[in-house]
Image (cartoon, rainbow, N blue to C red; front, side, top):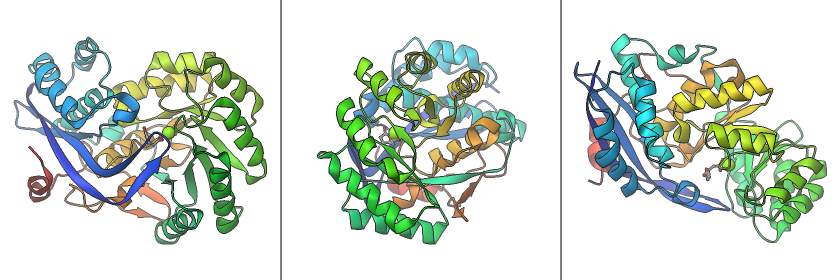
Length: 366
Ligand code: MUC
Ligand code: MG
């Protein structure tokens, strides 16, 4: 059960349709596949999606930090020594996606070693989650067409609409068009990726007051400390902290500072180990969570649903699990399938997924 060898493999898979949002855009999934090999010949996998506009990581930095710093620190540890592993990883600041992928690949290897599904080892609450779909920036007509296609094809009825453009009326118009086209029974919420000032965000929320939005996420930057508190205090829509709450300490700061009332948990940045801490922290404080999406591929999405479905508190809301639908291809032998608006956890040991060697050979860039 000892970690013998770690691979960090860069790969690139184009998107059919890029995702655009206030802090950036993604045209190609330039991710890193992390493989943890044990001395028993077991291999655990996970993927790290670099998001330079959110965390400063790049594909090259993820490969380098794993090869040069993390692998030497964790090779030789048992799969059960996860606290030791994290204490060593935490000697290096930042690099959340690299740390998270390593953590989840270790969990996958542990599940395969014990012949147990990771989702059951984490909590085993349920076997599926409702799916929420992210609608990126485009014309009103294209955003409506995207949401209608996803609803009609996959049965998804929960949508997170990207906002944060200027003028504010652009996004108010898009949300209004989506509500008019999709009707009152569909859930809509918004994510600004820090695009607005607090006063712009307040104006936008006032202008959308009649649209029955259920959540508002990162409308303005966390560093606008008093402005964000002012905004959160005046809206009746729960304020979700996403990129401002990436560690247990940041979660505490956002919640106790009155700058957020809900937390987005992303396994792509906090793995299973730290996501579980944040989840329990939120549950203990009576704070709701949403399982977020770091523009994940199918490997990452399998990780999110395995974690989200494992716990009562993380499975209550629809998880953001559909971004992979916009990719032109992926790495799994058996693709994930969303049906009736739900994504089931993969059965089988570990994460229950297998990497197709031909696809990996085709898309790897090293
Ligand atoms: C999201 O919820 O913000 C887009 C940027 C990022 O960091 O994550 C995605 C989705
Ligand atoms: Mg977000």
